[in-house]
Image 1 (cartoon, rainbow, N blue to C red):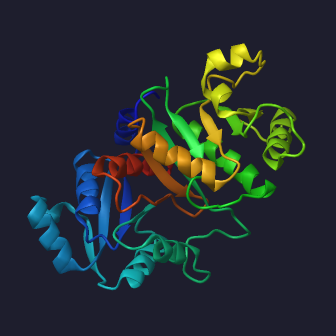
Image 2 (cartoon, helix red, strand yellow):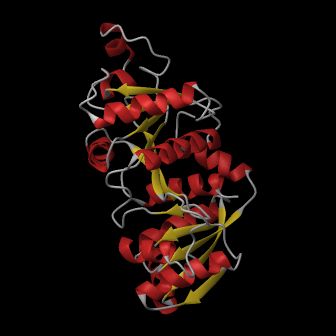
Length: 301
């Protein structure tokens, strides 16, 4: 895929899933879910204050009857918990953050008794799919929002998540770049060491379904000319499908630089829970949220 619009087309052709939106009182969430319903991507249950939801729909010119169900819960934290409970009851396959704060949303997902975490010790992470005008295809990146400083086990999980997302987008053998400050193997840089170890695990079949290389600096990962100038022999260099960040800081800076300076568009979700969880910012556009719904719909079981 080269355009996020292709995500929408693919989601339209897949079996329709049901999305549950937590504290869906705001116009952005209602607008995005309304558009997703009109596009035939999902059915939607809205959890929030019903009077506020109806008033917002009326203000935005949206027919409230298009929603599968409206569930009353005026309290922000309780609305997030109720949305999670509906998922656990089998009434939905996708969770979406509405107007509730991120901490309350994540607390509901992580709740030990009624949350959405599978057994064992799963890693919860964030995956974004970017359409950057200057790049020749979609870019899948992680983690820019959930894990501040991933350890080796978490990085391995993150790599597998981006590979799985790439497979969802129809990329049979994605090229994964483990990003560091340099493509040289410098033992004094933990990012380089972890990248090299994960690349070796891939070569030995411990991480499957992709070609993983690292460490790779950002320029050689996405620019063939830079790789050629530096005489770098790599199947990934200059043509990466996935970028895995060594920590949250470079990932988050890329996220905001790509959208604000490069006018990139994106889709994003939290993975590792029982279902895809859309964690868009309250400031994200309706289009971003719609693309995120399409990505989650394709990823949901």
